Length: 262
Image 1 (tube, helix red, strand yellow):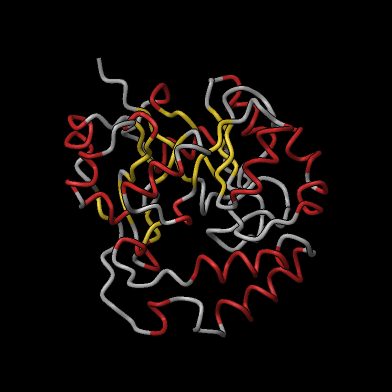
Image 2 (spheres, rainbow, N blue to C red):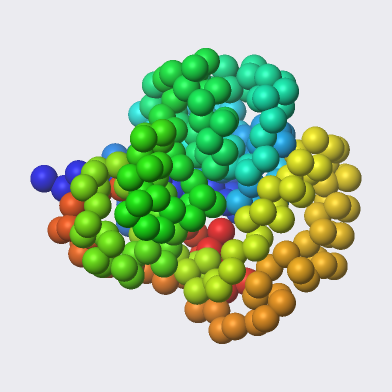
């Protein structure tokens, strides 16, 4: 029996596009029954990272569809910098989505401990932003997190993958974008800091600040500092990883304009 499950990226999804249509348009080969969860921006907050926050991607109607179809919401609260006061501020938002089947992607270990105490129904996944890329880091992270997203480039380290004991608690990328070949992912820290402003301001200000911080400036992305050839989305051999014992895969959609994934 094939018990592979997928978590789907809603990055780049238009808010008005129903999530079921989004699945059919961008992930037509993945049956709805195989979709474990979807991740993307919900309501405005300073807790995001990974991508600059401009607007919501998963609507209230989308969330109702997810609930009706037993698909979890994975909330990307991956900001590196989260104070306890900030956590207290957003507790009502955490309470709103606190139900079995939903999960939070986290980079900050203190934030994990606060969520564990107050919201025990959430599954907590270690973000790719933590760059957990060794067996020592994996074993240490599994003491705190339920599951771990490994960096894209770890997919090519077969020796490391085979050495992982708890493969059922690992999420591998089913495909990959620019982070696969990035020599130094400086964008992670930069975006965390900028989302403190983007997640706490009006939409018009967000657009202006985004243009200044990401279009006019080049020091936030290694590809802009030192361009390299990008190849768009790279598909991994999921069957190979399945035979090794991995069952959880993260799927991106292609961003053709930037030759990477959303």
